[in-house]
Length: 446
Image (cartoon, rainbow, N blue to C red; front, side, top):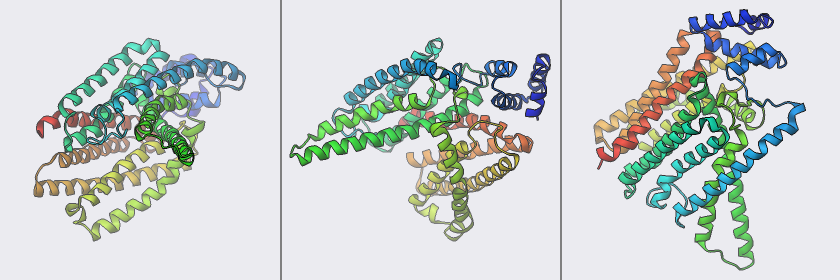
């Protein structure tokens, strides 16, 4: 384990730091070296040698925030905001067109086919376009990713656009996830340590989603107030106009939300993790950690033994279990976010025990849910929904096993350096299963 103290002892020894870096590469301990450099640079931001290493390892934005540079930062951010606003306005217009005056909800049979198929891919393409405008050197990679997303959308439209069965609903669920995964791959590849970049992308995605929900809530309040004011005046607004406005808001929000929390000029791992929603999200997940432990203890120690066959007989119960598993996986991903090396040793140890206990209980619940869906499949046959749930149970189980094995193989004081990158690697399994559902299911269940 490369400690922060060892890095700081070499602050005046460039050759020593270079030698230590090479030793960490040979020993497969580069993640520990990276985290130690990051922590030391945070403690000594004016140290030129440590600053040089942070740029070499791509650990910080090329525009660091400082009190003396506030005006310059605002000047640099202004063009990005104009770009974000322009892209958002265009996205709102596209969403209005594909909604066609129907409810802007991605539900087959309720929304227009172009909308429930296209909202996720169009959002991904809009985000990639915005990122490409801010990182011209990576525009080709973002363009290739956008082409892949559009190709997936075209495929889904051709094979499931006219369907309203279970396969169509599964396509509506998995196509946005595939688009999000494609954006993540494009954003992370090409930077040092893609696995570390991938974990940062996961956290920033959650932060962007939370910001987007806040914006959507504000838009919904605005629409409700507008509708109410005109109703009081005796003017009845056409329902189609309300649907059109809602579609425009839904299309405009994603890029605005991203621009609010993400510096599009740099990599995911170089983002600022201290202010705003990043800190709120981190505190919220740590408050939820003991509550989630309590819920899982009730599930595993009381409810499942007392009502063992409920999940085998009632799909609603199995749905609740699987939703709980996915929610816990998101919680486990976010609860360890934030700058490394800033927690006291005791607090870090408590967090590690909490994460391991919650992960172990979730693993048991996942095994039970997998047994339940296998039983339902053997009893009632293979349907699209059962096959999808079966695959997701197997995928999440494999994800937890992979991450657990990696943590077990490393020392206790290095668990975080393993947990984060291997979590991002494990998500690729989920992306692979989503792609399988999207491509194979329409032909398997015709």
